[in-house]
Amino acid sequence: MSEHDARALARDILEEMGLRRGWHPILVRFGPNTMLQFLDREGGDVTLGADDIFFVDIGPVYNGVEGDAGETFTTGHNPEHLRAASDVLAVWNEVRDAWFYEQRSGRDLYAFAERACRTRNWRLNLDLTGHRISDYPHKAHFNGAMSTVDIVPSPDLWVLEIGLAHPDGTFGAFYEDTLLEDQSFDELWPAVT
Image 1 (cartoon, rainbow, N blue to C red):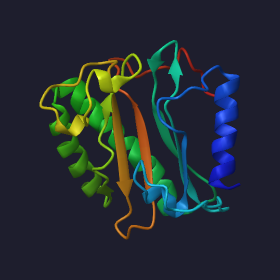
Image 2 (image 1 turned 90 degrees about the horizontal axis):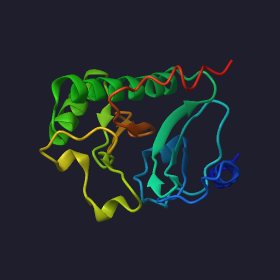
Image 3 (image 1 turned 90 degrees about the vertical axis):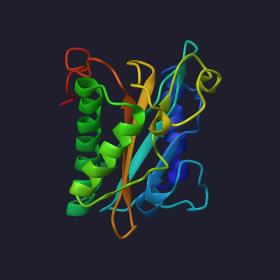
Image 4 (image 1 turned 120 degrees about the horizontal axis):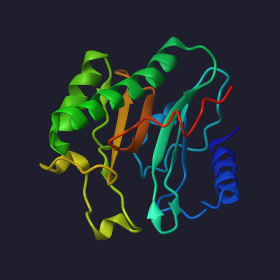
């Protein structure tokens, strides 16, 4: 499957769910394109390999309210890809806990994230540094990155983004979600078996 085909598939699925309209384009990045920045379009239409890494990033608008989610997945058994997909989520959870339990500012959260990535031998991608969401469009309320604010981000209004990169620059991983006071959705979204 090519990235183009994957984006088309994601558009179809979101449309079926009534979430076709998005506040940002659907991003699907395979292999080396996981290193591209949000607005980069220069990577070409990469095809997903049998032993690969990829992420999906969607920003649907539902009833006038923005959502935003991104997650990394792997195919095959490449240990570095598997570690990246696991570590990006672990770093996200550590940073989220620093926000929740220690009431750190946005700027402090990304300094914390940088250290957490370095400890795991990754580089933090500081071009992916969280943002506010709200009623569409969020930029009418705040147009900037979480990493620049000296306030503690409010729950339900800020998306924490973690992008990590392999030290040799060949691939990366990405995870984002809204900062909520209770991140546990087990009772709402039972595990798929």
